Length: 483
Image (cartoon, rainbow, N blue to C red; front, side, top):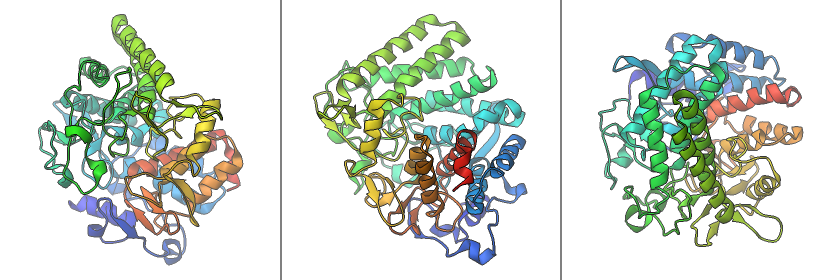
């Protein structure tokens, strides 16, 4: 670990860096506020920050003025800029702007995480040239990653390098240079399109949408078609030697059997855990939105109406298949399944990672309609085997960190998907009282003891919390005044 990363971890955790890496569950330092006599900023010193944006700093100041609770205000200021402060590397690659965004305590860039980490800053890009430069570099880098391997979920800074992730060293798959991990997840190809589309809509800037981006996004569509598996299993397979069965896949790495009904196969969930039934419904619904966005962008940028039509047609096919096979009907009103196989087998659960059933409206993958409301009620209840409720709070987890472990991300999604002020305030209370005196969000915490948590440096969770506070300040300001 280099000295810069060690410094960041010390600032984030006030504990020896060597104990803070990976997915370890750890005890938090006792009473930060009490030790310091107040809420002292946990941001790195200005000279040590990876990236600064005047527009972001101005938004922080405006938002803090709307927050009634000092601790919540402190958490927001620590968390909202965390991605920029600690994870963004802006430079050049092959003579062009390049941005690499690590996930936090792992030196690799996930397509999903990197897109989600910077998403809250998209709204400010039109006002800040430095942000636009950062986004152009990231859109280019993501296109380059997709061109390297559309089936990979995580990539290295060096596009010619070999993965140094300990757990990925002996994976049985077609590992390529530049790839950190090669778990096929539908959302890995959806998030970069969401980011690119949002950036274009906010700024009108077409500069990063060149032939390389065009080629990479056509590859996205080709990969979606391959993974409909109408003509056999396709090229992707993955196995890993691990005591954790969710780290590998069934049937020589190709996954459990399915009936080819038009849905896209996913071998792994957004949590990086293996799917049980390969048709992950949140991922497929996210793909529908993604294809419609690609149709709009290719038609506008390149006048390619033939490809736009192909995207729309594929989106319609997936949407119809999800409607036919991905809906559970139990006599009390239908609701979405989490995974299905096309034979009639359906798994109902939810996982905290996004896309999830809970997060469908957040990603514009579903309207906030009666079916979604029924789904939402069920996933936030004992009907969901990964819903946990304890003395510290309640929320959704998943197999990734096991039973009893609530992911703050799920609490954030509950707050994003409601207009009820009492529900929003309850979510903020849980988030405020479970950061374990660190001043940051975590991957997961024990339902009864938030001082037992995983990942001290998880930038997506931090920035998502900041995004939630900005959302509430804009849409529900009374909620923040009364927490």
